[in-house]
Length: 458
Picture 1: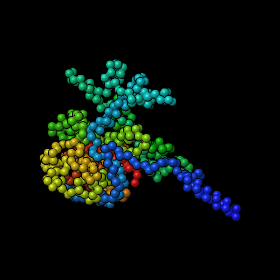
Picture 2: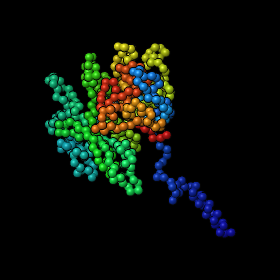
Picture 3: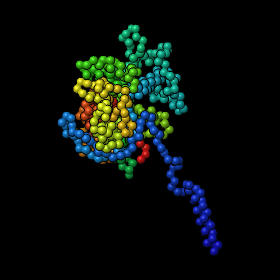
Picture 4: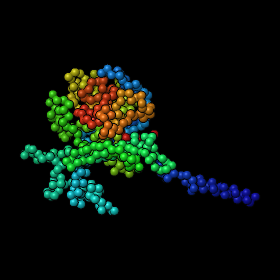
């Protein structure tokens, strides 16, 4: 009887101990993450909730082409910029690149006050030493040594009466890298968990860039053995200043010189969508934006990136699976007869919709997701490679026809899907399901972009 009572008492104590302790010793309790994580709203972005829609053209092609078949697909939740990236926002990128190169040049010129003093990093060579971003860059310094280092960032004015400094875009080179998951996914490159190594015959094709003594960027595609994950990384150097001559080049018999001279630089165009940016420059911007966020945030985020075609089209439809246009209707005018976007409404008439070329972002009402200018103003880059029959190939959850063209690939493999139509396009190109393409190395006065970021949650 005493033994039995002892057993009861011990069992009760054990139960009391278990109830009173949330994480009993010796049990699987996790690493101690507290509470439920809620991702903060990224500035200037809206959350596009997961959903299903019919992806593809709603209408017959205006040019008589055969449209790809429509497919029903599911898209995960993601964040998307409310508007296209503006000139003002892109200038932040340009200025950051300018300042980072200036600081590096000053450090390499022996000016240690621009070098960040950190323990165990005093002996790092100047080309990789941490930079002191808290120090103001003395662009107007009277110190001759500093002036000699920084003067190469500006053109020398041809006008003797002009004292305004013009930035030299040839200096604004941004280097970034990415992991070639397409190469890692090849069957011949499958990592062997039993041996802890890649197969002996594993090889990868990756891109690399370098700048020669004349400041010219050279792009190469190399093949190397796959031994570690570092071998999967491609690197690219990109001139990031927008192309300003495109206004004249694309419309030669038109007087667009004022646009060419002022569109990116003048504060009057600050809230207009940035144009003249290649797909490769937009990729560089996304990489920089990710770095900018992670350098200030205690909790890292998913990478900023260009949207896939499916994400872009789903977002454009605004939660209406069969919407022809982002505003949900089947017509480009509202019930009062006003146009719903900035495009080319009539032959030779660009102003009937209140705009001539580009307009300020957000000049028209948003769609039901709260996104502005998903039709018209400027067309937008996506991350998707262009193929007329890609809907026959992609999966039905988060579809994306991806091909990361290497430098050595032919041009036909460097076409990227462009969506949304622009100020110069007829209404057909404003439809949510309409797709066209441009080569990833080309810049146009009617193509811009916006970023997305995958959502850390369900």
